[in-house]
Image (cartoon, rainbow, N blue to C red; front, side, top):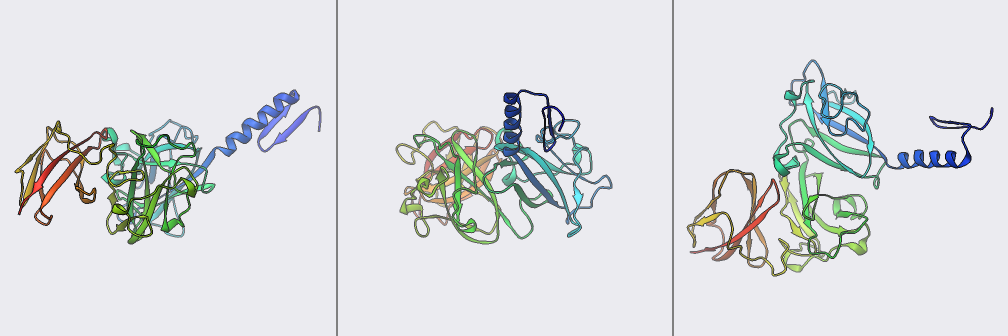
Amino acid sequence: MQGNQLTKGSLLLINLPMKKITLSILILLSSIANAKVVHFVVDMSQQVVNVTGVHIVGDFQTVAGYAGGDWNSATTLMTQMASDTNMYEVYVDVPAFAKYEYKFVNGDQFYEAEFVPVESRVGYNFNDNRWVYVDSIANDTSFIGAILFAGNAPVNKYLIRYLVDLSLEPSVNSSGVHLISDYQGFNPQTNILYSFGANVFEVINYVDAGFYQYKFVNGNTLSDVELVPAACSSQLGNRGVAASIDMILPIDCFGGCGVCSTSGLTENSHASFNLFPNPVADVLAIRFENEKERQIQIYDTNGKLVSDFTSSNAVERISVSSLEVGTYIIKTIDRSNYKEESSTFIKSK
């Protein structure tokens, strides 16, 4: 070796003082440690593939090294897989510990991008992109899943979107918020959640049909797991969900049943929607001020969720004939800003 020369992978340092060499190596190793390979796969089995190929666009393209910047529909071509010609894939290297948004494109023009279903969208501020949070905890490569083009999940699987509100917790653990479930071995380090704001954290998983137990974790150890009240636990003190459709679960308060409130579920007398008739025997109408995408949930006075769906109608009609006689709380969540409002109605005979 001639002079003071050091080769480290693609790094070449010549005639540099030892302190600068050490600093450069640390920077290189740090960038490697924070790098993540993400494997995107899209299932085109229900599409006629464009002659210009299948592409992916997103806000990751610049950091992944693609020319033309982010949201460029012609630069990130996906490759047809030999093992299944309906599948198209691409591997990208991106910085870890970041949220990325993306869409698949059947062609190379942005107007050929897929229409993303509500359950898979970012959802806030009418954002209709897919999203994923990339971390370096589980594996060197994150496999997103062979998602059906313009669909929610891989074929024969269902999307579950979990949400938890930590606004009543003293703090959010610096290790992040995680999900444990029986389909991932109740491992508190493999399923990290992301927050779009308001201390609500969420994650999307793809599962087979079936019933699953789960809990939220404010941290990444089993000692950080929430204690689920008996009123909303299914088995062995866990929460439970039956996967038979793609679904966005209601927002649960960490360690609680239903919404977070210092006084439990209460009526908001200043809600911007009206309920009629009230009391109601068969069909309850909700009149909103405008047409916006909202999540609508109905709880009984014990905090048990009895109905949950989304609507963009200015007037929504709900059949309540199957509910038992009593008082119920109806909560609406504006999907653009997560503003919550609630009111009560009485189910009569």
